[in-house]
Image (cartoon, rainbow, N blue to C red):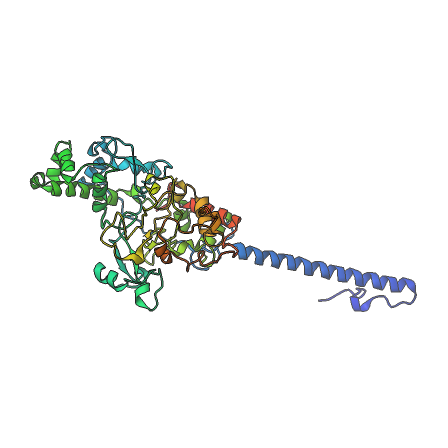
Length: 484
């Protein structure tokens, strides 16, 4: 750099003698040092802010740091189910789904407990719905959402399906192989083989139905739901309904002579309705739009997404899978597996007034074929979290009614159980009080956030929980229009 001949550099400070020269020299040095200090401090602030902000920035899929604007830096194309006019069978199924005349009370249809306005879940915030012949009987469990079941496989026991392409071995063989193992670990994938086997698939909280058709049949004869005394009574209602002509046309005249076949075919139609109608699998949430690059998440939502996926913190994605499949299928936010969580007993339920009654999921009492497989006692199906923010009851016994309560349970169950469970007369905390003590070892204590011990710092702060809930609200369907 060329400077004028009279320019003064730090090494060329005035050389004259006397107080004025010394003062000028000191003043110049102080000024230069001050400027350099300001530059260093400014750089430190910028670098520090960047590091802190990056630490708080959520990752989307994997470990990528996302766009600071909230956009997905790596958008994908989601492969949604094709949209086509409903088949004749699905149209019939839609009519049957919404018809209360098939119930003993004449007031309850499938849609009564599976409201389209609430993502085909309960229409209210009651722990369980009312039904029975006079609509006064309390249901056994909260009605699960019927949305996003189109990819649900039949119930099976085997390795995590994401880790193997082999067909599952028969249920009896696998159940026998793991008998005596008290907790069938999820996602273990390591020896010994028996604990690595996990229950997965199926319908209802305990997986006892194999298809949507089987699930539709169940409530028809449940004494606290549609309350028909038997299948023959349902068949009689169908024979005298306006649908019988369409049923004969679709399934043949032989159905009218076989009550079991008649009901089975009618429920097949309901299953087709649930499979074909896009309303059951809309994939129209803000998160779907964000995955495809059509929406931006707020910084709060992005932080919630990061925590949701963090294996050492909330670890929600350990069971509620948040990533599209390798071939572009949208995430269902469930691994369709079963878990014993040890949620507290809902003492408001009538059946729980009996201290000897326990709902133990896979091993009973409503499912009877696996009663001897006690390593699964307390395990229930992991539901989808899509539209969970608009749901008013959670878990198999409806003990919680908002996401804050649910998150507090996950966060405090092990570290501060006194805040989750009741106490006995002596003040002892009754942990896992909705499961017989001999099955307590089935409850998950290995996966975060349940890997914390009593007195440990919880995995999440209140701010973390608020961020996660903010993210979960992005899973509600109906966010604008998703571009195709």
